[in-house]
Length: 299
Image (cartoon, rainbow, N blue to C red; front, top):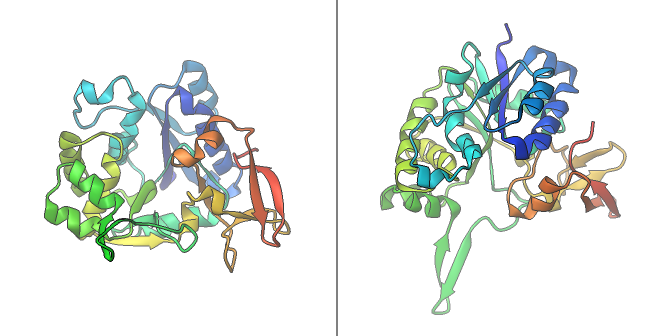
């Protein structure tokens, strides 16, 4: 029995991305000791047949917390915002659970080991949306010359999800934890607290982003343990990457140009890449040249 498992979810529209994620994992020999499980949020029978030959198990994702139909509007893929808080229920008997969004792929096995190592001793292992290469992480509205109203993702989502002003201010200036990739042990106390906060968020706010603000509140307000990993463990600033022609790999733009472990096409800025696997991006090499390169995983 394998102790650790990597899990993702997709509908039929995200199948290609999910399939690329699976292939990016399985090319590493170390993956032989790690299970891969898939949550089905609208995959076709043919798509499930392709995946079944590569992964350990596929299960239908459910609405584990009841959500009104007017919030769903047929978007079954939104189950990912709910079901990822219940992973041990879907796939029991594993020791460590690593979630990776379907629109990401694994470039280095080192980060897989970091996530599993980081979640030991009842910690959440996760990266943040703040990094030296990402630029602005907060927005400000300036008025009366030198006064500003700070706007943060955590504050906005906490308020729109029905949490109190006190809680919203507690999380407002904290590094935003990106729940697109995270690891937890099966017996971590985070699961129950996360589910409690998620129920509040889903009742008052939108489904999209509910699981993320619920986890940020779990860490920053309920004070559960966290191991914050470097941004290269969940890299979302796609235009900010560089390419190392000697090592033939994507790297951080600043010294020591560490290899990026997981490339994550999150956000509207990456729509073209998500929608077209053959999209050509302009990317700078570490010696200053500009090259054309496809950034989707190609086995």
